[in-house]
Amino acid sequence: MRLRAALHPYALPLKRPWAAASAVLHERRGTLLSLTSDDGMIGWGDCAPLPSSDPAHHARMAGALTDVLTWSGDSDAWQLRCTAIPVPEVRWALETALFDLAARRNQLPLMVQLGAPTFIPAVGVNAALGALDEHTGKRAAAAFAQGYRIAKIKVGVAAAARELELLQDVNAATAGRLRLRLDANRAWREDTAREFLERIAVLPIDAVEEPLARPTLQQLHALQRELPYAIAVDESLPQFGANALLAAGAVRRLVVKPARIGGMLATRALVNRAHSAGVEVVLTSVVDSAVGVTAAAHLAAALAPDVSHGLATLDWLADDVADAPVVRQGQLLLHAAPGLGLTPEF
Image (tube, rainbow, N blue to C red):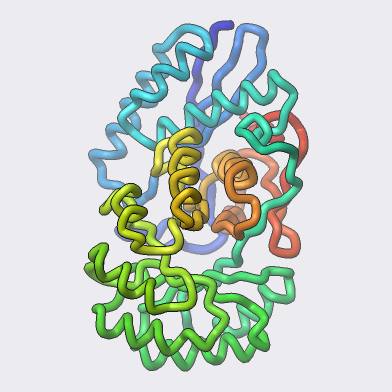
């Protein structure tokens, strides 16, 4: 059955400004890709590159999306050509649409089409509390009251000594019952990182992401060996490559954005390699639309259902392309309907 593609650009207003690397954003822009078969069935994918991507990358993305509009053939031919797309966000969008279409045709939830043995109605997610400041304790208490048991906090913003005090306040505000997932975004020199990481070991730390300003595999391995909780990498993943990180035993956790990895199949292969090496994987989104977040949530349910993922980002959006999945008691709820379980409003 032959397929045809269409593009649906969107600009979704944000509830509050989002500080990206190069600008303060007030809306999230992206493009939905739809694939329609001869019988009228439609699959959907989301292409929403990081706003910090350089203009050349945005131009490559636009060119790759436009090229897809010229394709023809059945789903097997599309899948084969998809693997050769050079832009990972476009591969992610097209592959999501292909899997969504296949799942709808087979009357299966997307996660089951992706290999889950059965439908899982929800995946765990962490609360996103923003940068650590004097109000984080109040936000943490509110998140715990809403059912979250893990919260992500940006650190490395203030002096290390001050942030140690603030983390103690956060812990006191939740009586030590909220686990803390800290993201330093490569803020610290090795000596500062080592002292900070050792001193917070008495707190309920889930993981610390990217603590070193200029990491090496050897430095990460040495830190991880000394600590009782996971060191995680995000931007270091493309820098070093998964194979090198896993071979070195550098960290206990990988933070993976499926759109940056380049699709469902590439993410599944990476997660399988990581799990074989005894390394955890957390999937995250970057304020994608409901289509992108829901796709990542189904993938998380298929690959790592027992981990809390970084997918509770939809409350940033004042509007969306479809009815967004709800987060309740720290769980992102999914529909058992075929495919993604949602239909964009285009």
